[in-house]
Length: 569
Image (cartoon, rainbow, N blue to C red; front, side, top):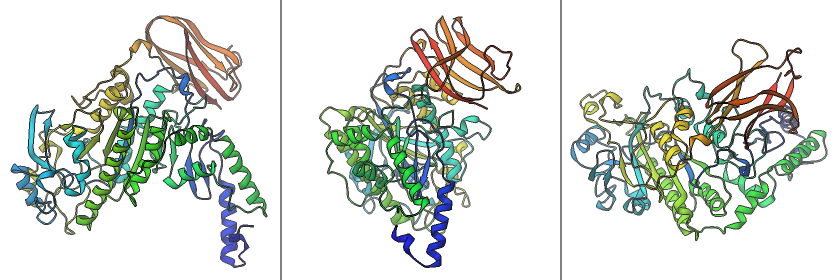
């Protein structure tokens, strides 16, 4: 037995019983793909399965190989002490609002960290209006080479000051509680679009990789499934690489039924983990990069994804996170330490991409963001509280560089002694974070603008000149939308919805889970239009009647096929 189980103390016996009780509650939750079944919690080690179809079988194939790396600065980053007002009225207001918290030339930054660059929004040079603290000096070469961009004043209307709600808003792409998009992620909808057979066929590589944030909405698709492979920390990834087991068997006893059951289920899970070969191959294709700072939390995460990218894994979306930015007290030293940790890691990651012999650095874009900013006026602890607007920083060779948007206007709040936050109405300009999302989807990930608007159910303004080397968006005529939902009023009836972009013969079929044909729901020559077919699957007098169970809905138009898993009950 495990030594933990050998103890004769009552506390150990009770812990043993609780462990078995907890284990008996744990189940495979079907998410389709990474395992035969999905999310597991094994000995308090969460690893979420997030599936997709074969990448070789994609219908909406991406027309480039661009990679997007998202960096969450969790807690609410203080934008004013990140991109520091250096001159003019904004500097005077900044000093009024932060007499003890302000960053000062000669003490906290030097002339070398003063930022000069083109502002693409105002079409003018911004010379010396802003600076970065010396602790961020690692990324100054990227700024000077136009491989770093700063988007001023990013947020959303009616700001929410809850970490978790604001994170959900940024993750989903909506801050409207009545909007059904709030239960899905903006990346989940993107991946669902590019991988329409997602739930039916297992992938060859993870469509996305997420380190940390196991409850994050970002990668949840409209069917409620996760589309990123989630490691809760770097150690989990290293365990997989070193032992080739996602769930280690060592340390689990064999002398009691619950232990034997746990070993069995873990062995089944390890055998069913379909990404193991792809991850091992990519990891071994690239040698370790030695340029990362030691003792840096974010750098450890970048080491993992950097090696997988250089090893040509094929995954296009990655997300990492560093926490600690909720600086209600003790901000002076803590925030500078966090900024140094983040930017040192980002620069090392960019150096790793630059070291690639095949020019992968041309295809990797990193975006650092936070769920909200901080109060512009210092609090009684010489720190800051939850705010609204803040800057977003982007890094990569595909950028135009420089500034976008206009810096925060502090005049109104500085004149009101009891005001702590800027008002959006007082700003000359603020940028909705979904403007940035829409721009990245269209200009970096090459999604047709009409489909981008569909993903958000509204149009968001694109940020001009953010991306330097725009990708070529594919023809919308090659795009077919296919989905279903329960009929709002008719019981046991499914509404099958699809859009045809060019006149063609269409067949909508029901298959069993092995892909065998059962029945045809709809067929015929369809003109360019959107269609809804009502399917009453439970009526025994209906020729398309089927029994309750799990099926595959298949859409076929010419040589194009899309499939969706459906459970009828």
